[in-house]
Image (cartoon, rainbow, N blue to C red; front, side):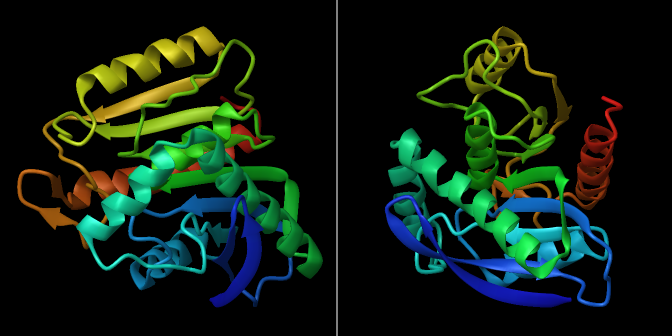
Amino acid sequence: MKVEKIEYQAGSVGAIGALIYDEKVSDKRPLLLVSPNWLGVSDEAIERVKTMAGSKYVAFIADMYGAGKVSKGPPEAAELANGLRADAPERRRRITAALETLRKESEKRGIGDLSRQAAAGFCFGGGNVLELARTGADVKAVICLHGDLKTSLPSKKGDIKAAVCIMHGAADPAVPNADREAVETEMEASGAKWQMTVFGHLLHSFTEEESNAPGIAQFDPGAARQCYAMIDTFATDAFDGKL
């Protein structure tokens, strides 16, 4: 798998994301934008996206903090992520810039099928891709895994063009039931094609093997396996108009 660090302008910051693809495949492939958790474009995120992309996708990891910054851990990550959570317009500018960079760089290399585009995000990154969907971005599918659901700029009817899939842990302490109920109400009011799968008893970050914060986040291998399969199935069905 080829990993290329790409510099681009994202909202108010200069960013460094990672373009990931199998250089042995010559065919044009669907585009998959991935917004990582609040640690940023970490080594773990790169390894995860290499597996997600495989030979099927051209993937790009969004840099939401600028300069390719990787957080040292929860205190710093919380400060960085919360700054963007409080500024939805800037958050949207940065995730939109990452999508535009994926399109541009894949087209430059002749490897991307721009008629098939999807975005997936983990935790803070899940909130980022939901904000992308709320902008009306021209992508077929948006997948949020144990992500932020709350927004200060909820979508209105007709705003969301992508099909939306949310995967969530029923016992996630980071995202209260009120947020789940609010996003359900928002999705219904927007007229979006959407679905939510709630995994019983699971905490936050259940698809990320490196996550372990007692009482807050816990990896679950069975649910993780299901979710990664669902990402591909949901995106493929959206590409093929089968949702």
